[in-house]
Image 1 (tube, one colour):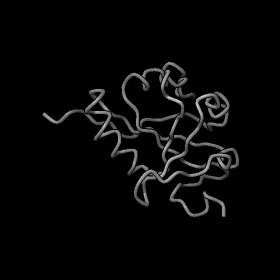
Image 2 (cartoon, one colour):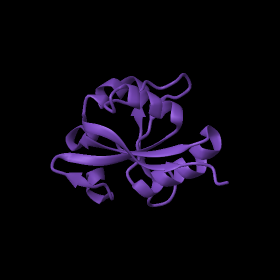
Image 3 (cartoon, one colour):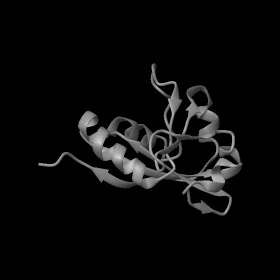
Image 4 (cartoon, one colour):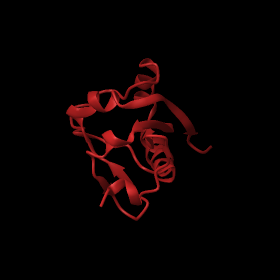
Length: 128
């Protein structure tokens, strides 16, 4: 069974929409790339994990990034669907907690298959 046939990702032509919760430092590096690439992983970060639903990305950005980084952002980007088939969908909890695990040493190649630009679609700050 093809993992992408039963997920909730959106398809636009031959692309798949992915989401990435991120903090301010990573977002600054994405901005510096012209909104085209994800930065290399830091030591101790063996994988890059985009997620398959906006809902899951919101939870991480709002509930984790804000607490640890002072702000959280949800980004959205399109990837070549055929390229993504090499990465099995991982269920990290409940039915809607779905992510891809991209080994850090494959991130450059992964970035080469982004279609268009990475965009910020949500922003979260601490509640006063």
